[in-house]
Image (cartoon, rainbow, N blue to C red; front, side):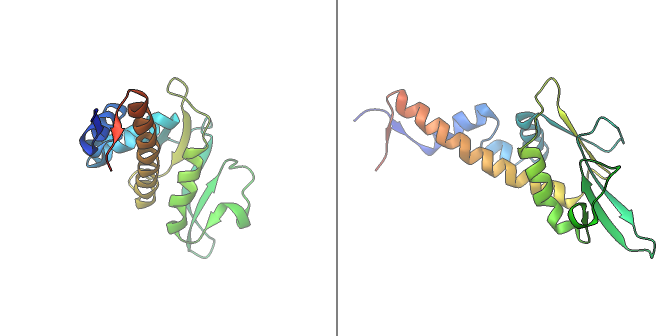
Length: 151
């Protein structure tokens, strides 16, 4: 029997890519690796250079709403305004996933508070997605190197 693919070997390769067990246990490292992979920078400093904006506004009668838009000069109430922040995790996840940035010129996403739970939710989902994607790549690489899968 030849060399076998083990969970330990897979995790070792995943950690080299930044998406192994060790990184999954450190929220800041996981966040950094996800954002680096997608070429995205989150900032809480307002800038006209941002590709996307996520922030809280107050209605005229005092209710808090959340705005998530790529154009702050033309906000659509139907498409860009959220009454609850629980949907913002999915919105941010999709925005990061389909960004056009890279490491040298990251896509900037403005978020008025970088410690909101929806950011953690989006990063967690993206980390799991990338970890799974890279696991498939690692297994294929190991098979090409002559390793065999266990029964």
